Image 1: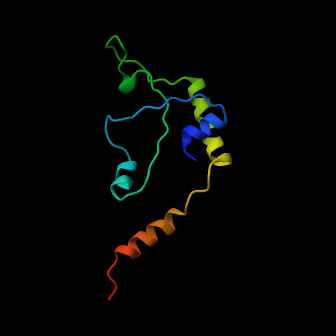
Image 2: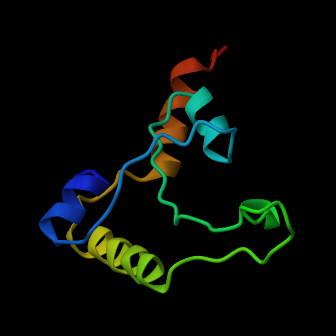
Image 3: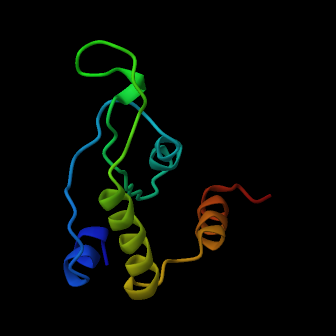
Length: 100
């Protein structure tokens, strides 16, 4: 079950957004054919830049943070079992390995 469906079932308010500003750790997994998902919390004063151009502390909403906690718990408690990543990697390597 995907995160949006889990959030809907658990009545957790979420927003969906394509984060296309760069790369992250999931990039390497995606290059090798793994399906990836991410969850993030909106950040105020990104890279310490305030809207007026001054330097200011980054911040997040406590409600957004608690929503993320609830979403993670719901995913663990009510999500579908995920395949063993080590077994999936082993099968992929064995499929592509040349045995002599």
